[in-house]
Image (cartoon, rainbow, N blue to C red; front, side, top):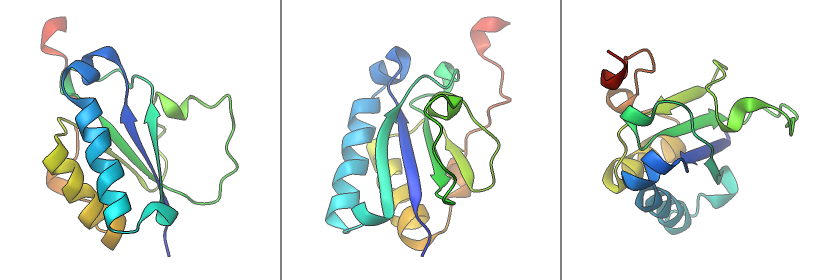
Length: 122
């Protein structure tokens, strides 16, 4: 059985956009579906895609030893099994838990596009 690490951004822009509600929805859905042993939930740092937040990153746990100095809590790593979701809401988060975490089926239409430019940079 696959295991996952699910990170909800705790940066100020994502928090202002509803990241606390997204985190609560993930926590509640994981608990209600008894998926807590299958998925570690935590608050990641800012991933730098503030204009696309709230941001969520799901990584398959491959048994890789966790490096406390790794930038993985605030940076996309490009690892196999890593999925980035953007513009998350509590409803979208429940769908990610129901499909990605519970059924090993990433929700492609909710994938974020990290190469999308920030409109304020233009």
